[in-house]
Image 1 (cartoon, helix red, strand yellow):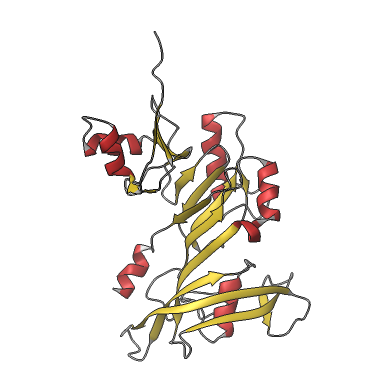
Image 2 (cartoon, helix red, strand yellow):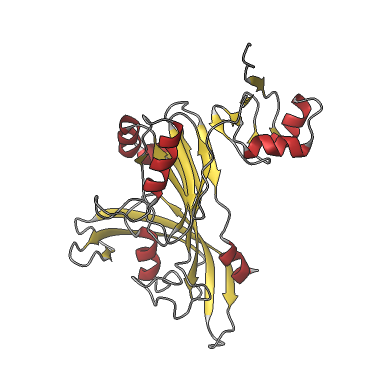
Length: 304
């Protein structure tokens, strides 16, 4: 019996994925299309897509795969945002390490979850971390599927990344509502604390652009307690960069036990920092790709 072939469509004009598929797959209902998406049987430019509102542009190739598609990752603290033969982009929740601190550690990490996930597809598959997020930071991460691609992306990360945006709740209200923080960061190997210097002291150059999006009065035990929702765009990606930079302004990230006041002023029992948008040049296709992880529900409850 001849196996059914995958079905491909070329996008002629900008559209969203759901209406595009409905127009191409005659007779299918929205429910049926959503089922295809949930089964990971739809790709855009060879990358698996699960969102019905994925934007399409002219020239994109949409493919509907026959069969059940790839194995789906199911984990309460991690979801696959995008996957192709070269990369996996994931969104992690706070509280999950990117990679183990010690090689022999049995702690569950993003790496250990993804390693098990790709091995279920094929025992030959591997994953390799491209960059990291702190344990208590949520948001977007990229993993490569080969050590060669990992090395390439790490080497040319600053050239590949076109936008890297975080959102944070910070203590107080900033006098300057927009600004650029430039400093040199040095990590103390004994304490693992990162210090900031306004002059070049031999540390790593770190640049953060910020913009205040909203100012809030919590009205908790202290009626004067105020916090701000801030958007942060990184020009560099150093260890603890945002946390150190905001603390250096006198407005540490809410919930930061390392550089701030911990949860004393926090309406949320977590570090209020989230990797929101990641945009970069795909190393294989050389096309710009953009991913967005919605603001955590805990943030939304506080700012609405």
